[in-house]
Image 1: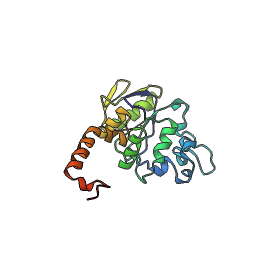
Image 2: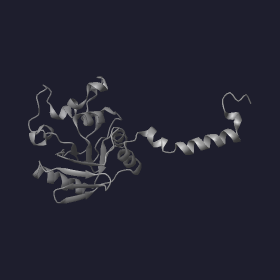
Image 3: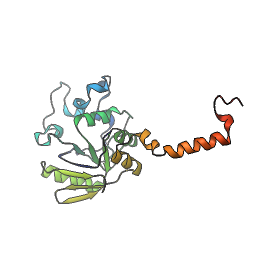
Image 4: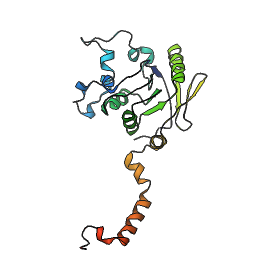
Length: 206
């Protein structure tokens, strides 16, 4: 996983609350292999009608949002089922950061494991940011994970993230890497434990 430190990119204002994982990727698309990519199915049933025709004016398909890597939404983003494919759909589409007032906890955990930053802001700041990128769609938004700030034009907004998740993103670590930070302490404990209680070691014969 690549470290995430700073991202400056176009942002897409998804002014919806309670966007759940079934909306992010409907279950019927999840049988395909991960290597095939899930990006084309992101928000499929909001972007396309029952006949498969694009929904006119849906913000994700606005040419002014082409190449957006940041998504701004309202509260309760990523709630619902625990499907990691919801994160795959975002990442495969090109989204590297979602900004919202609150997230489903399992979604946020899955996001970090895939290098996607879930940046939590206040509801007022989310509304301010939505208004800013609606008014100026081509203005880049800068997300700085080190400083935990978001800049859009003359607006500067602080965001929150769990400290352990922040550490993982900054270093590009998965859960195994996080554990390996303590490899020396783990090895020292194992040596001491082997000496103090040798009978617990398989094959000791005690």
